[in-house]
Picture 1 (cartoon, rainbow, N blue to C red):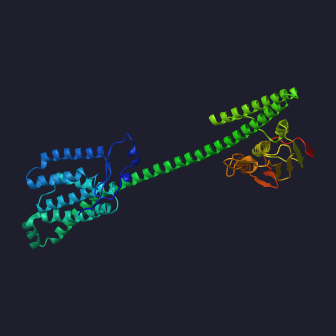
Picture 2 (cartoon, rainbow, N blue to C red):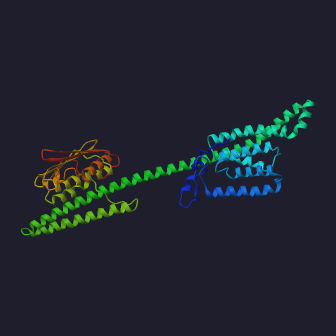
Picture 3 (spheres, one colour):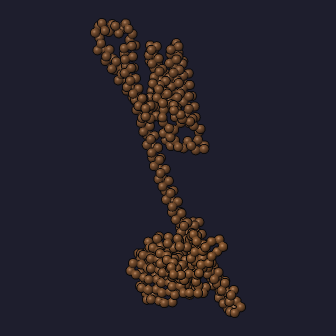
Length: 447
């Protein structure tokens, strides 16, 4: 009766996955007969079997059959965790040889209990079922052998002549019950150990899953925060550099005719650079440590933004229509950044000789922000045709995706249109309960 072991090493014990760590004990690889166990486990089992053999040899060495029985059970004990199926097969063959030799119960027979425990605790499928079948069949065989065969032919004949058959049957039943109780207890203890180990592995797996879920959520949050910081950084740097470049170019051209314009341009460049540096420091501090806060621009700061853009020579027609309603701080920041990015694009890629229309239309549901500007005539570069606004065809920048993402995160929407030589950006942002600073006027203001 040979039962190949199918169990993988991961089911051998609690948190067996830890054995894959670099510092873990090397493992004996599994095959069709064996489980994957650590070499330390195998050395311990072989050592226990060796000690058991030496101790039992002092008490049970009477003849060759007894010695061979001890050798067989010792081998079964040594491989019980490496290959429970092989250990059960060796134990069965040894027990059959013991009964054929007519030997009585020996101390080495205790190994059967350890083997049955191993079949339930360390195996699955056919090997575990074979261990349970061995409990029933082995108990019946042991009862018959002890109650009938061990009496000898003379005692058996005398019992039959005296009509004492019932006593023999009851003796067989009693021996079988005692055997099934002892053998079954060993197998049941092994099954309970396996159940407890599986429960512990299940809890550990659940814990690992929760930790991985938390790590994944943290990674998503971190990535979202990085994307938000990247958008803020893009808005701040792109806007500030566009203003600085425009002022520097204007001062260079006007230096000969209007020296005072140079001082005004340098003042604008200095203030713009300082503001950009302050915002960049806030963004970098927020990236280095959680919870770092700083002032964020809102729609009330559009006055300063528009004046800054006008100082570069950009003609902006700004109108606010309707009664301002409460906007959440996130929507306030999104509206400001969208206007900032759109005006920066108009300065960098649009026709600065024509007016840029900026409209803020307030309704009870929120605000619609529209920026419309004329496009500069596209030029054809040496390496390919440029698209609207001077960007090469197929090239995607951060500006438009960033504006759309800001509007979506604020619960609104953003549309972009390019037709008839004009470029239009329209964003709708919903009203919220946690409002930031509002525009100071509820009347139409034409700047």
